[in-house]
Image 1: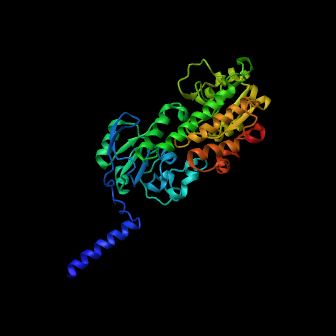
Image 2 (image 1 turned 180 degrees about the vertical axis):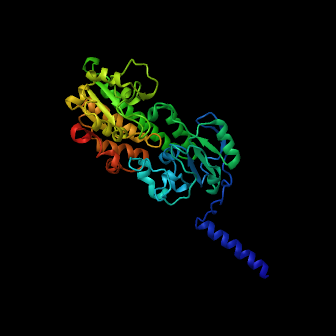
Image 3 (image 1 turned 120 degrees about the vertical axis):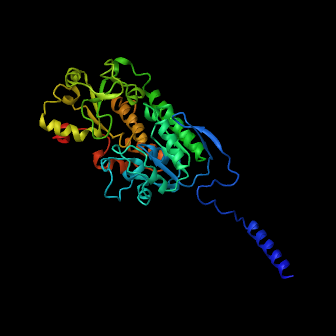
Length: 390
């Protein structure tokens, strides 16, 4: 009789829990929830990887840009570790980007600072550290190491999916960036969020292109943009012939026709030769720390520049610090368009626009924090060259 009563009581408790809406506890460890469907996806370097969408609870991101892109789509609460470069509480870590705005760090740095190390990270430590990754016990790894063989080997070593992202040469406007967002959305059950972000970027691009499409070619000033490329290594000679932000903004690039491939330096002689054609100079903030000592050493270095002499020199935010700040790259495109065509963009306020962009990418308004970083020099601006560099 006691046994029967015990069984009846146990059954009643089950009914009570069901009636109250109690659910089974989450599956611990690296095992997907019961019934979760597996799917084979192709990552951004062509690898086919089997994943279980929406099941992942412990995420690790490795390589330049991987964590940044994850934060656009994924939940930072799922992170099980971060690279040392993204944990500002550590004394022994790469610190070359600490003065520059990295919006994902401004948004989620407090969370990153609580997490264990999955590797050193940074431009001088670009290799996956399997032992540190394993110590974080991840159930998936998001990587920016674009090597098929090494990615396959790491996946075999870790025993969990390794998904490699890529963004292509056109950055935020590249189809590969959109593809990476779609892939993250698919893996983490955030398809709607990824589609919304990609549509936002497409709409922003369309708005800029629409505003400039009817400006006659003869009314377009010639622009020289400099300071592009890797953080801390650029100066007034570092530029690009096919810089996508200039193309989207419909800007006439003073170095068009040189046949340059990608971003790189032009010769000093070519800079001097083109100086009289530079109606406007737009300088990336990443170049300031290198240009300033050069200018103070030889104040005649910009004497040939029409824009320098007429005071038409402008500062955009550093878009490249531990790979591309995609939201800043988009904001820079608006700033370039507004600088070159002020009448067409008279209603655009860069603080408002930057907040709108960071809200779309990261869920919060970060303009004030971005502009307050030491290497932002107060934000988007027209430069008084004598006081700024003197």
